[in-house]
Length: 102
Image (cartoon, rainbow, N blue to C red; front, side, top):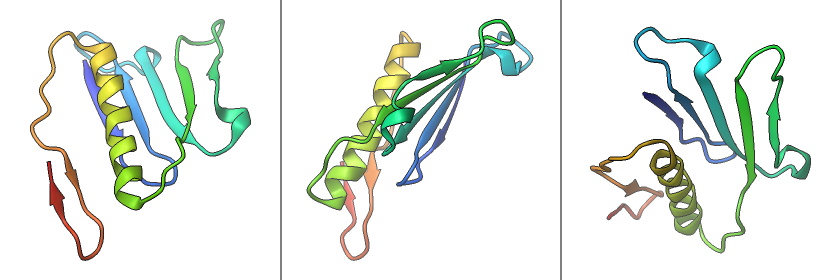
């Protein structure tokens, strides 16, 4: 299994590829966070490919650190869903002037 993560703040995304051996696009599931209600859904073309795009709305937040934490937790939940064993070595949040390690 291969997992790619885009930690951009406005539209973060995760790609989970379940190919055994050689990478195959057809074995990908893409997850993304969105602020647009119509994209808070699952999109696929089952007769063309098994690729799925799963959108989830951003949760409300009251501070930038809370926003970063929500995005990180969302990614960890996706990883947990697709793997039996996982290890997160570092959870790091940074905003100008105030680095925090957890």
